Image 1 (cartoon, helix red, strand yellow):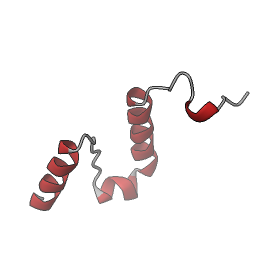
Image 2 (cartoon, rainbow, N blue to C red):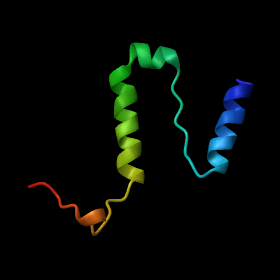
Image 3 (cartoon, rainbow, N blue to C red):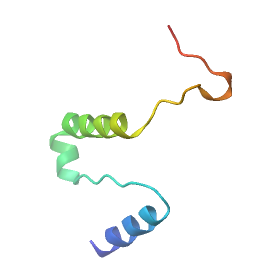
Length: 59
């Protein structure tokens, strides 16, 4: 646990957010874990406008 706290503090200090899930959650409830990750991504990742490097949205 101490290693996890140090690692989390290091990552947060460098501007990263950390999601943690127990091994048991991943084994027993993978779909729920993936749903939580997707929800986190959708609420924190703004869609670039305009898209970078001349990319375009797919129809």
